Image 1 (tube, rainbow over the protein chains, first blue to last red):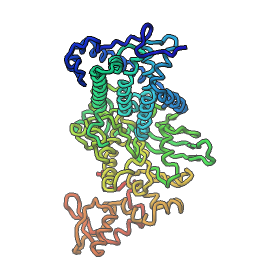
Image 2: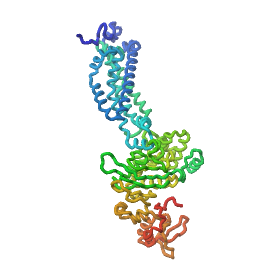
Image 3: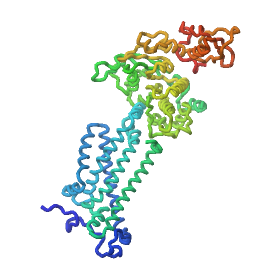
Image 4: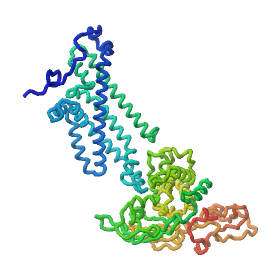
Length: 250
Length: 356
């Protein structure tokens, strides 16, 4: 039985167009400079910009679903301690699977195949460990005296969670979101193996082009910029949501 | 400051905060027992005591005496395993825990202010849980900040980490008083504060208590604090049994047993002097003697003794607040104070504060 061929596959495989094309239209392209601005601006609106947008969507969906699952599990583990170890074990296991292997492993799963769903399942799987650990650590790090005072003043469990524990866990939660988001931005490039979208597509195409590397460099740079921007935004969100921690000695 | 209070007392909010004993309730511990599963001795085998409405009851004792446990049983932070606790004649077991706790002020040593909320929001905690309307909460927060001598406009929007330790503790007390509870529980509230600030917080709290007259259960391990703060002191011994429950003066004059005598210390005569002021002393008339100096009549007898000793044992002139001469404080006159407790007012409160 033939192993599934993912890269540069013909017919049933994912179509990974060579955006560099064969018609080497620009001087710098013909001269094969390291970075060709002409090519870049020509392919921006048709190729790179859509890929960037797809990439953002891939990451947003993955982090949102991963966050929802992790939050649920962390709340459970916070309430019922025995839940923690199995969750840690399972999410650690997921985290240790090499990403190339995981994407491949998911293809034969019925209902997944070569699709965005496959990409998202894998991306979500990698966010769980980081998010779960950070959310749970945040909830557990709320000072005991603060909880004692909250209970002593007559807050119910639910009120303590919403009014005290979650707000105080926010810095840890957002720290987890930052790591998960940045790593998902990077990981989502590999998702192009199973889902023909995102910045991974031009990167793979660039890898396959032996001579002309502008495409690879441009898409790679966009990935890095996206990660930095997402991280910066989350820092901003944290500053907005946790005004009490501003100017506070750590 | 007082205008805000007057306004509130006459407004429809119904949260009288002045010397209004009707807002305080009697607290009765009836054969209270607390046993932890797995330990052979109960932490508290059988504790009964009654705190009259509006009085400060100090729970004091060495570690392992169950004083904090006893306090936390009252608002059911720890579940009772026997007996009953009545607040205003009504069992605390009758009602949902959260409802009960919202009616009992709670102050702990580490304060436990919410670090993510401003001073204003911290104080508003219980009123919000009770669903007070916004403007009533706002009004109440202002009033409480003024009550603890903090400027609402200056401090109200600060976060706890922007306050000094003493300020935090005062905000903790204000937060506990926010919904005007009939009972206040305080667990070593000034234990983590340095001695100088502790004394001023103690004085501040006593002045506050003069006005709000809550029933207070106050836990400490410091007998000097107990004598200073308490209307009554419950001395607990290891194993959670009550050694003596009486006013500070009674305990100092007549310690129930060797444990109490030992616990209050060898200097109990001096502590006793600290409970009286020169107003309680039968002074010698001024018969042309040459006094070595002057003392205001509000001076505690203990301080007066120190002053007389510092003057080489020579008598000091005692002055009324209006400047009139009350008499001469001599070593003999001071010594008489210890001779008979009947000469003192017996309330155990240092008369230097509050009493008109």
